[in-house]
Length: 51
Image (cartoon, rainbow, N blue to C red; front, side, top):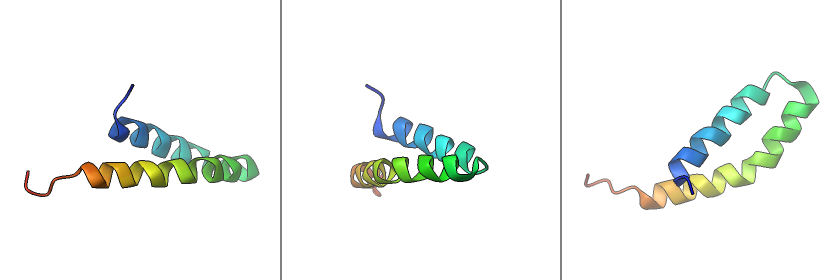
């Protein structure tokens, strides 16, 4: 299973690619929004500012 950071990067690239796709792009962004927010929470929780 890929790491949360890898998955976040892939989903963010998919959203960027969908931006110019009109309504289909909006649907893709809406579909991935919750997943991206959840992955951001995981990545931020795993971040250790002391490193």
